[in-house]
Length: 398
Image (tube, rainbow, N blue to C red; front, side):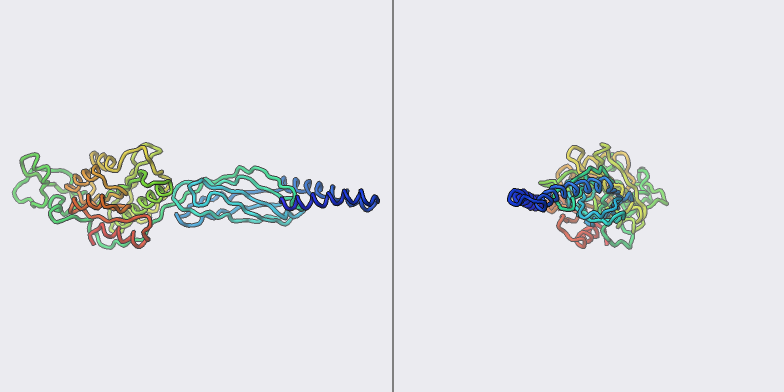
């Protein structure tokens, strides 16, 4: 547009010079034309801008992280002259892979066309897509007129659900020594503890409680309850910059969903436990089918990475203080510290525990090594989907 203005200014100067050098009818008509034409073009552009109608497709958009988000925008030219050049300005929040888009279009008179705006989705979450303004250029490209649109729609970018196998029904396991404490039955069958009597299977002895009671205590089974798995997902911020934090948060949630998918394929009742920083509390998402895993992905897509909130060790400990029927526990976290180590060690005495680390560090691996029988695997945000699926399989007894 700056070039067009420069050219017009040059033509105007030459026209004025012509009237001074060659006073006559032709030079006067030329000057009037040079002055009037842009004014007429400006008036037409004003009418076109007022006649331009921009809409936004109201359908819900739920792309999976990494997919392109495509939004249909119907635009109508309600004027009798064609719109040669129009521009639409749209934006997504800064955390999206692509924040701003400028779309150039043209329209025939009295016609409607639908255009697609495409955004990249690098991270899961809830976003607001905004059509900020529309601009119209006059036919000479000298004037640019804009109007605010104020159109917006909510977009939910879902976490990925990795494909995993899971054909048999064996639970995550530990060493044989630990299994004597956890017993080879489901936690749903561990309804209460009683004193040992002759004929009880020694595998059902609750060793920790027996040491405190100075008498053998055994689990009393209640039949007919299904295997159950608790998956604890750590969404506490980890990483040196905002983008890295979201990478780890996405990987942790997606790995948790993959672990749930593995469990429900084995016909186990599964619960995903995540801290919701907006509600200042831990939320529980029970899942019993593969469709339920997708529902959990939708419900957890908007959970934010947080700084001020409980650590995974606190969430797991508080959850088991009031509810202990899970037969298996899976903890998905980037960090293995001493506090979490102590909680895992305590849980492993009564439950089958597995750990999936979403960051590879020597400190965490060393801590896991000290736990002995706890199954564990390590991944990182740069791992392929196949590697992540392998890690999920590795924390199960295949």
